[in-house]
Image (tube, rainbow, N blue to C red; front, side):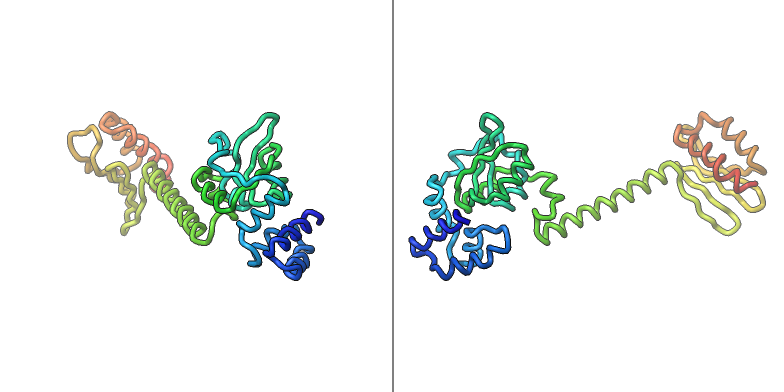
Length: 267
């Protein structure tokens, strides 16, 4: 509370806010963990640059320029959504597991604690302007999968876009699964008294009378098949005899169809 009053006193001394405005902010702040500076800006009493000037005086630290301090080695240490959430930017790694961090409010202990828990490093705070941090988040922090799947990182439009991508992915997955299925097992249809199985340019027609027809073209055959057999055994014998006429896929499918579909249908 003392640090918060000191900030208020500085702002009053600078004629940026009145005692009544500080009292109003403190009344709202007492029931939450939000900082006085944050509330003053959000409630429109001061702007972010005025807050920055007061914090620099209170903490007796300079306002840094990110371009002068940023090291590319830390660009993936904190995901973009956390940088945006807390208005922070990692600057550099220092000895003894210390992470130098640019912050709009170096007194934001909640942000500091969460970043230390996330990174496993000890945070060293630096004061930087909100606009400088915001501009450099998009320039220096790459977009990652953590940003895509974090609910705090994007607005409605991005959520809709992400949902569309996921729906498209599901649809494509379904089509891919169907393609794989039909590539392996082919199709089956019933036309009148016939049940017809098709795959790989081969068609088998199983009739209710018990007769079975083989139509189509073997991949290595010189012509087309159009033969009718009185029973399953005759068809199986023919396929074994002409085995070399079929491609590996054709033969595998014919073997599967005879054992798993046509045998049952012809019984």
